Length: 292
Image (tube, rainbow, N blue to C red; front, top):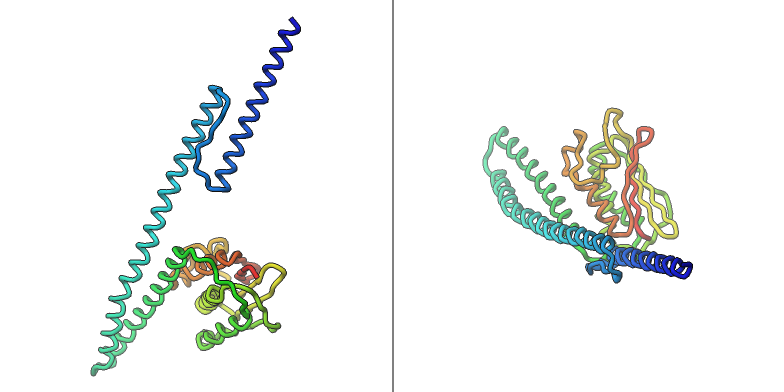
């Protein structure tokens, strides 16, 4: 009797051990799929009705998820190609419109006709700027090239970018307070860093309500770029959404495409960093972090 009981207990313990081993195997296979993008189905060695049914259902879920992922990738590729094609297609008629406007400006026009042509010309220029931003964003989305990291002077690039926009800042009555520090040397993609700074400067010109203060600093791993300015008291802005595509909640931002800060966030991510915004005591600050 005791021998039979010991045998039953031993058998049950062995069965439990094998079940635990199979569960551990299933977990390890799931982890492998997650980290190595492995598409192999989950397998088990032990014949158990409930366990086999669990594995079958897991594989069904994984198959459906993989199929959905493939579909999403195809749709994203199609969308990116479509955006690129649309951007190219719009450039041709836009260039033609600008050409005809330039020809009309050379004609003998009345003051009223000349004023109307100039207004139309300004709208065409605005449309061209929006199209360029849209095209840039679509290109960055589809471009999977690794950053070309080299030794660059972050301080010089910032000063040159701000100097290039000096007339626009002056026209808006905005004073720019620049960092008074030693040149910051980092290893990064100069073109990407330049685009980040250009978009931050453009955003300040379009939306800043007071003087703009810029800070840059580095630590052992990252470089930091901060743009800050005062805000209108009645502005309702969600800082968590400012970097989202086409975010134009307040009236001032409806003048823009809503893509400039999205480009900043996208490029910061490509450079191993991030882009965030915060509002505190009537001030808004944009902070961009990139790998040093």
